[in-house]
Figure 1 (tube, one colour):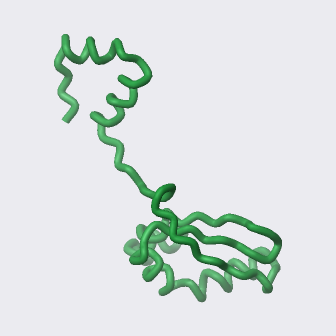
Figure 2 (spheres, helix red, strand yellow):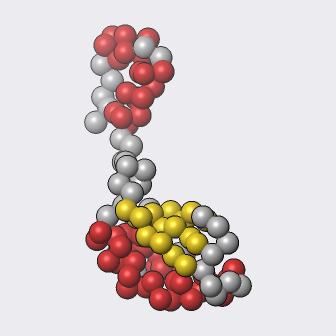
Length: 105
């Protein structure tokens, strides 16, 4: 992944949200967020699978793909969203915000 970050940032950004789950000794489930991310992964999949099988010394591993939209969304946390989460934990911050009128843009 480190090499991919510098070599091809488009593919790196598409597949950085992929999750690998070991089902048993021979099955690895790969969860991906979107079809476009899977298309980008398919470009390097042969190299990735060969390297992975060699690294774990198990050439009978089978990879299953699973589209998982709910758990793999990457949310950009702005200052306003962070503050809103703090308000959920401590409602007194809302009163402070009303009083001080914080600029959270």
